Length: 251
Image (cartoon, rainbow, N blue to C red; front, side, top):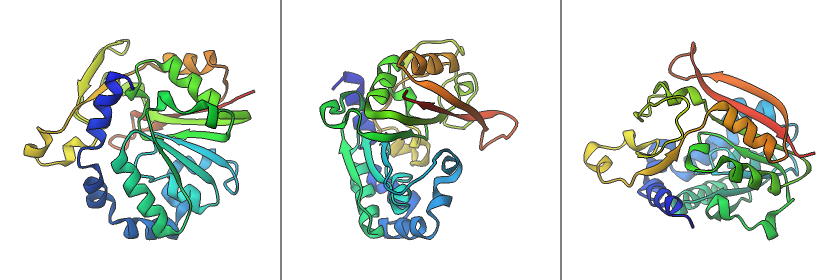
């Protein structure tokens, strides 16, 4: 495991289970909401799925299962790949409460077992800001490509690179030149929800933020055919871009 992955793992295992219980509810409560409206829990991402039943989905950096469990409820065969044991604990407890199967692999995304999972999935899906945890976008996209079956689809939704120059999503992270290739250390995304004395003790993550062209070109260079590119308004200001979604296919 790379040094920066070890660093990020420490950050994402620091009181993460307790955080999810506090902010998403107990696993039983979360499962109840997922069961009541799984499509609604997927939010805008439901527009990018053609089907659910029997579809094999790799949920990359799937965190606490907030999208994986609704997908499983809808009939998908979901495997979460994430670096945090705490995230796994919460996700599997939610899945158990919802009475659905969920496979959860705790690993560095760049070290996914390709012998086992290469060419296995119909869809690779990620959302909620994951790309900045990886320092080599070409390598990352190459792994996404290798996980898919022929004609498989990648749904990659992430924070808009506009956030490099303005903290539009209020994560309290530093801004920089849009074209910066700097690697920097900063708090994890939900650190600002903690009390100040706990916040000071939390391990920091190692980030590399990308431009739109870096992300798109890495997808193309890895072999993907781009099918769609959408930009979404920030939840703090609907006049500014906050997120984007790329849909790409493996020929």
